[in-house]
Image (cartoon, rainbow, N blue to C red; front, side, top):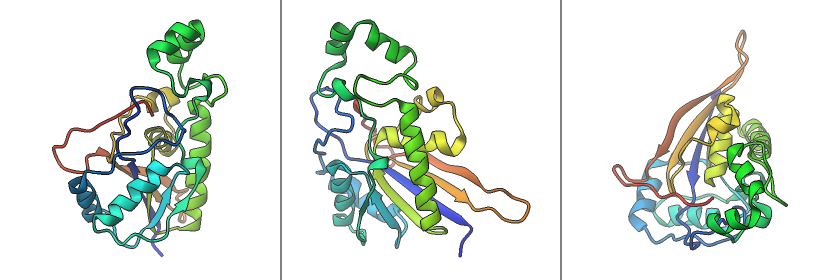
Length: 216
């Protein structure tokens, strides 16, 4: 068995949400870019374990990669790979929130990792749940390739866990729609405690293609 478990995270296809915060609500993705999905299908390792979040836009993205030519296995959904829960802010624009929430909203953006939107969760809480999921799935499929169709916040949280980044630093990382981010877990051996390493961040589906990013 290989001592290295190789993760590839793919952010879901673009969402047309009209500029509102959609977070972990279930909005649909635009999976019409057949060329991008074919490129992803060709770039991904065959025979991988496939995971998604609980949200349909990640499942639809994975299935579109299968339609692009990848021999897709059964998908396993894990809600711990879901996007950040923005609670009462879902469905609102940033301008509307600034007007309605006042200082509460501005405090969130001054220290976004620690603050929790009303009825939602903080980014630090996202890191904790994503980190737990990474640990569990790595142990379950040690030495395998694991592809996870997920969200921008999930990918930042995974990198924060792998690199032990300060949460605010992780929030500075870009994760465009249909981009790939690759990290490995190298298992412990005699005299070595095991460690994560990063192979790539925010690779576009097609070289030279400008990425897209939204409000979650």
